[in-house]
Image (tube, rainbow, N blue to C red; front, side):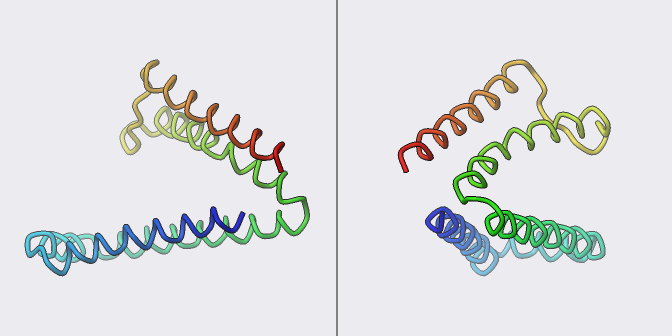
Length: 130
């Protein structure tokens, strides 16, 4: 399980470095970022704070779950979090179409559900081989 955390850590650091590179070396990206930050300062701080609170809550909850249950069980439940995300995306799109726009066509939903199924099957195979 630590390798999955390591991968996520390095992917997030890589993406952060790309953004920083753009902000440092691309004058138009830097100007656009400054303008956006000035225009939406309170909103940006509020959204960022909310995002960090959710991230912290999720991390603490996951660690607590790993403390209480076998790691394989926790990881298998975590593997279907994408399914929860699809459900939340559909619900938010239906409830707040002005603010949330998720493609709800049969083709895109089928692709998303198939991807979740592949991940779940992969997790089951990995869990059984351990």
